[in-house]
Amino acid sequence: MRISVFGCGYLGAVHAACMTQLGHEVVGIDVIPDHVAALARGEAPFFEPGLPEILAEGLASGRLTFTTDATSAADATVHFVCVGTPQKRGENAADLAYVHSAIDALLPILKAGDVVVGKSTVPVGTAESLAERIAEVHPDVELIWNPEFLREGFAVEDTLRPDRFVYGHADTEAGRAAAGQLDEVYAVALASGTPKIVADLATAQLVKVAANSFLATKISFINAMAELCEATGADVTLLADAIGHDNRIGRRFLNAGVGFGGGCLPKDIRAFMARAGELGVDQALTFLREVDSINMRRRVRMVDLAREVCGGSIVGRRVAVLGAAFKPNSDDVRDSPALSVAAQMQLQGAQVTVTDPEAIDNAAKKWPELSFAASVDDAVRGAEVVLLLTEWSEYVALDPVALRGQVASPRIIDGRNCLEPAVWRDAGWTYRALGRP
Image (cartoon, rainbow, N blue to C red; front, side):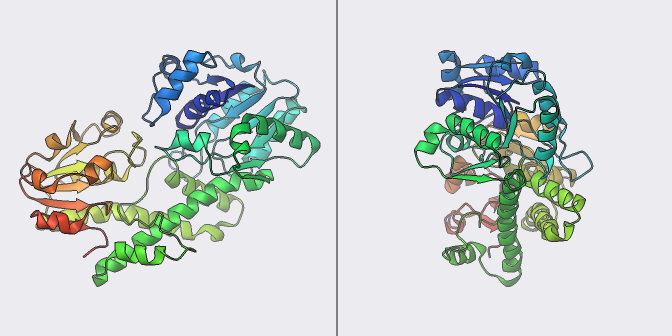
């Protein structure tokens, strides 16, 4: 099948490359020439495990091309909209400018029987308005909303072997026929038993933001428990283990620490609240304000912990921050808790050096006033306190004995509760973590 993908960022580039793995011919469309040129050379513009390999395979096979020319998608029959929906500057609401631009580019090239598939995360009601726009020009073109559920660091796996599909479309003969075409796109995964949920447009749009809001709530819940544990001397990791054995709750996403970040959870829950307000049901989501507040409070608490272990002041102290990306296996620094903490400490007078296996270039562009080091050894040399803020596997596996010989003072703050306290204390370190005695 001939497919087009409008928007070749984190979502679109992965989706385009993965579709060629399923045997389809794909053209990726993006408005940024340098971005398109890099992809056309087989260079992934961001770090995502597995993407360079399938990108190279797709290009070598001739089934994958990238261009800035939207008319190159005219011979495709299924068109995916994978553009970003960032938070509006100064507001909680999502900025839909890129979504509308993608539809503007599609309208002149659509033809009878084509299917437009929305994958971008949008406020509920957006798909309905887009469907009306398309129908005014092309009454014989259907819109399906097919939200993505990708985890950065696992995006290739999640695209090729998803845990579910959600289709939102009109309950009409044309809508069902369009869904049949999307079934052809996903035939391999559907044949392997991947569940498919068919819904109306409103429900399909709500699925992604509801899922992200639930995950954010679960993370902030255990971080709220961490605050109570600090006040009582309890251990939040043991608490999480105990309640996680309840299969109604589960252990995943109950890892207390510096909180969530990235380009999805923070902006999605804020846009969800904004949309609820527009619909007059803002009281239904007031709890998300506290979820967001708890999450941001964890960053401040990390700075407070550093101040405590340094005897009450971080002014002039040399601080090493391990991690810049918002999560491991990614170079994404959008709303990164690690960089937020590093920047706060720098503003309060500390001498901060940040390191990360993949995200230093992106971090330096966002926070040029910070100092960066290419390795852990360079970052911790002479440090008076070390903060582990992104749980890269190589940081979790650090040897506390060897590391002690490189720092000025053996103090470590485990912002992800991923280290063994006894091991580090036995090696002579002052160990602190959120929610642990």
